[in-house]
Amino acid sequence: MNSSSVKTLAEGSYLGLYSRDTWEFAARPNSTGVVGILPITDDRQLVLVEQYRFPMDATVIEIPAGLVGDEPEFVDESLAETAGRELLEETGYRAGSVTHLLSSPTSAGMTSETTHFYAATQLVREHSGGGTEHEDITVHHVPFDQISNWLAEQEASDMLIDFKIHACICLAQQKGIL
Image (tube, rainbow, N blue to C red; front, side, top):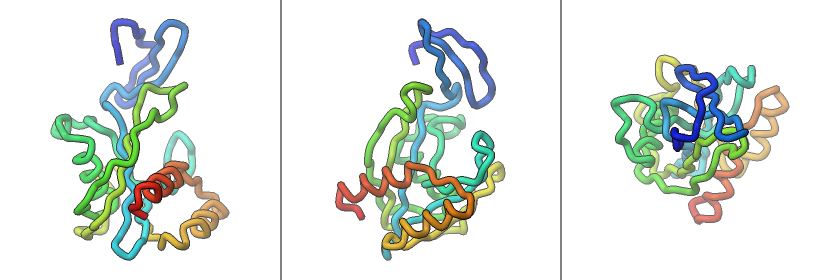
């Protein structure tokens, strides 16, 4: 973010509100982006996560994801390294292969953030997952051929479904990963 033309309107620990010219937007003062990972097991199961999201006041089914450069010890990590670390923290899987799918503005009219999508394959389970001590994540294994029905069932039980699941599936299919 070019700070010379940006005015800070409000800033907290994890989110800021800024303006440039006449446009107001949100950004993360402690992060350079976001990684999202579509984990695919050798037997074609997708590993998804479930967690309560305060802004939505609801439980959301998502791909594992995390902020880039938000902690001092990880500030020099590559995007792929961040994807691998977040995957391990949230799901308990270590990826043998991490493939870049796409980098895209998260919500270009609202934030300067970029999301970097990856597919993770050749997964090895090291622990049960669940995130860090500040997270309460449930890990789900869903056979790829049942994903549409499973997501519909979750939505029918009042879960929100993050669109990034669908985007990553489509991208992984286009690249021949799924």
